[in-house]
Image (cartoon, rainbow, N blue to C red; front, top):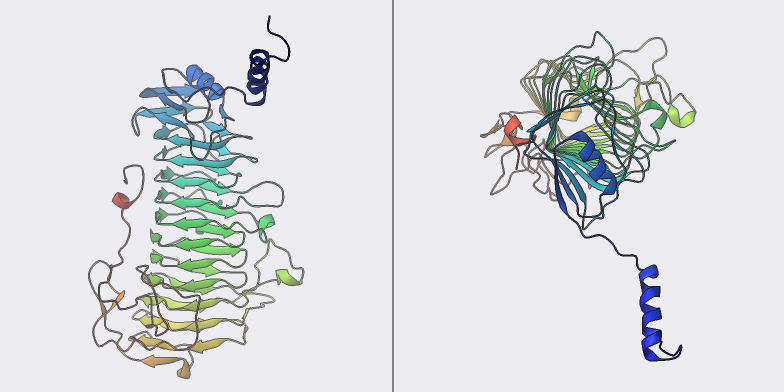
Length: 467
């Protein structure tokens, strides 16, 4: 036996201590499983970097597929179908991702199980659902999100005719789920749920109005929605909606229903009820509104939340900016609808540097509209200016045209080129994502020597097959 002070003895001691100080971590592996029981077992034992693949086939759940494992940013844990769309999971439950799960990817499945049984719970972080198809049954959301830093991309959410959103975002007590990234998804064919709520995306809750989400919703396609009245319903603060297409949903709105400080730019909104706005300091710019019932519907407030009004009511819009948009062939381009019995209207609204062409009235204001700013707009061949002030617009043909998206791009000689008035430092890009300089063009398009033409997103641009 070595002497306690000998180098050999001390080396052995330090080796043992190191094993306790730095536990051995199993190396990442790839596993192929053939049953839900095997899948659950592998998930429970998963370590960072593991890839668990379920063989193609149809599986029926009788309980939740529980996911609480933890990967890392460098080595996420992946739970995948053998091929995209090749695994169908029906039955009573789907994936229930719960704390302390983090850095987990769920990919390639077709979900036909009961609605309301797939969730990303409180206390989770960095969970991703990608390239899945949701065709769940019964009432409830297809997917509920309560965790932070979630990524939802390249999924297909469709064919729903029951109550509950396709995606329902809430969060832990008092705080909406933060830093969500929802992109390249195909939301489609939400049929009537009998007058009950039915949004494609509900981001937040009335009780979370003042909670900041800091989420980004971009490059999604929303089509053929016949929910209660909202296609997308924002119900918290500080989110960004950009480069989405909202189309062919004549009874549904994109609604900033609750919350403040949202940014909406680069979107195409066609053949819908348009964009509805409540809340404060929203920025709406570089969008195209074409063929809608109302292009932008500025809310007529019933309360002022900042003064203690109920967060569940219609918060008066204050200090909102609606600028550098192109309105084409809407029944009414810009409207505030009447409210009874005590309308509060909106205050300090800026409506500037927009193009309004064809369609019905340029503006129709049916409520208090205090300290408004109108400037730099260009109107052509509308059904009349309505309440658009005479000194707030120029009547001239904007010379719109171009391939890919009718009614967007400015042609040579357009009076909109370099004609914007006022200072709008927050308006940094146009409908194509091209930068805007100090000399801005009126409307959604900024003329460029090499423009990237905006176009409506199609199913080929989004969903599980998109690469």
